[in-house]
Amino acid sequence: MKNSYRLLWLSVFLAAEICFAGIIDVNWSRSDKLGIEVNLNLPWLPFENETRCYDELGCLNITRSWYHLINRPFNVFPLPRSVINTRFILYTRLNPYEGQIVKAKNESIERSNLDIDKKTKFIIHGFIDTPLSNWVKDMRDELLKAEDLNVIVVDWAGGSLPLYTQATANTRLVGLELAYLINYLVKNYEMDPKNVHIIGHSLGAHTAGYAGSLVPGLARITGLDPAEPYFQGMPSHVRLDPSDAELVDVIHTDGKGIIFLGYGMSQPCGHLDFYPNDGKEQPGCDITQTPLVPLTLIRDGLEEASRVLVACNHVRAIKLFIDSINTNCPYIGRQCSSFKQFMSGKCFGCKPGMSCAVMGYKADTSLGFLENEVQPQEKLQEAVGNKYFLTTGREYPFCQQAYRVSVELAKPVYAEDWVQGRIKASMFSPNGVIKADLTPAETKLAHGSTYTTIVANPIDLAGNVRKVELSWVYDMNVLEPKTLCLFWCNDHLYVKSVVVDQLELPGRGKRDAKFTNKLCSKGKKQYVDISNNGRGTFLDSCAVSVSEKSDRS
Image (cartoon, rainbow, N blue to C red; front, side, top):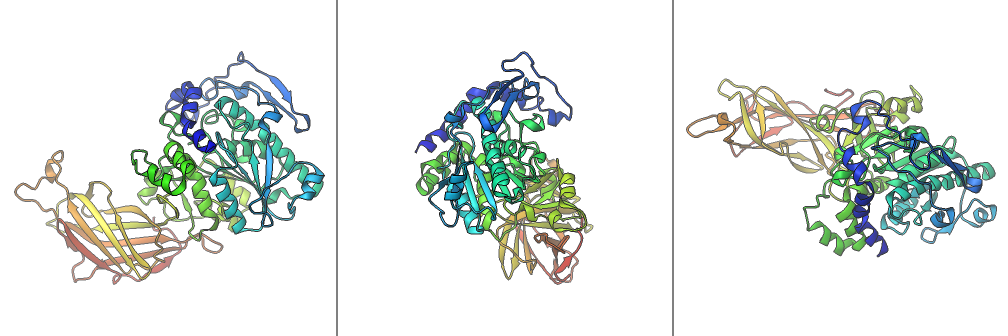
């Protein structure tokens, strides 16, 4: 119940704390958008160049580089260790539900079920959150189901409460606590840091970065929608960045900007930065769809309903990661310059290098890791700063197959140069049927050209599309006089062929395993004439299904 009230007040506390920084930061202030370095440090602010030490953990300072007039105008030191009271709670398959407190002391470790030879996953919650949240339990359970490993939940609830400025400062001390524990295990129990993976949400993602920067050879950090306020546009040592681990993979789901109640970073901050649904507004999170909250309240309880109301996009990164742990559906992200380019089918195939990567738990199985031509680390450095796009569903299971559908238009002499309207498609396969809107809005289609879009659906057609039916609705728009058919006009759509591409999961020996199905008219004509409100059928008679090794584009 306490978690629910904390979530409901999340936006209120954020607005009160960072209103000034957030409002200015929306457009012109972001140095990453301008592509220039903006140096607005304020050396006269309090705590400048001060240092505080925390016993065996080490020291923290606040120097000029931690200040920025726009991105980080305020800084304080963390609360005392006794107040934050960072705890490490261990779960294994021997104790999957009853946690054991682990400390950097021999007797604590030796009494626990910690197995140094197994992989260890740390989970770090974020702002106004606790280890009692449902998502922490769900992630723990899925991890233990996937592998026999150590799962350690980092409890810093004593420091994650408002005010936000104080919570951000507390993450630095929590990072010291975590780094000290890992280094203690490495030094005294010969734990291999290459077996350690830290997973952090929101402020927890930056906490993971602070810890990782102090652990040589740390294998991996996964940032789940890292918090934006006080971190976006700041130097790398202030936030999560690729140098914090051998692999830093990040899922961005709420990057609208704090003024629009978007709590997550939009700028890349890892080796692999994934932007499902453009990383801003997630399917099923539209707050205007009021039935979502009461339905969720009935089904999942008050806490989950609060999350849907306050931070649905922000917590979607958590849900996507949890879903990715044991699913057989690959979350394949394609490297692209923009989400619009991705949705138009211009970045569909996987070319040599890191043009494709797997989002979520299996990110370390991405194509670059499986090739032997170049060391994975070199591949990852090439990927830094790039964005990987994909689409997901509204609810579990979120993972979807991606299909590139290309409609090749014919141009007979009696066809209009262009027509405007909507196309819907039904794709038939022995594995199922997929129905989709190829043109979500009224679209201008030029005869003689090819219209391409991405269709996402949970059904896997296995590269075997036997038939496609297209339906066409002509649109008369008063703002486009040429579309008006008051007396006569040709409102037909002439389609030569339909091509459906489906990409398989990249793997060893499969640089680009793409299935292509080309479907043509079942009649003698070289095209199908589809009248307004009519339908056309295309069969796989013009070409058999083939597996190609290179992207058509």
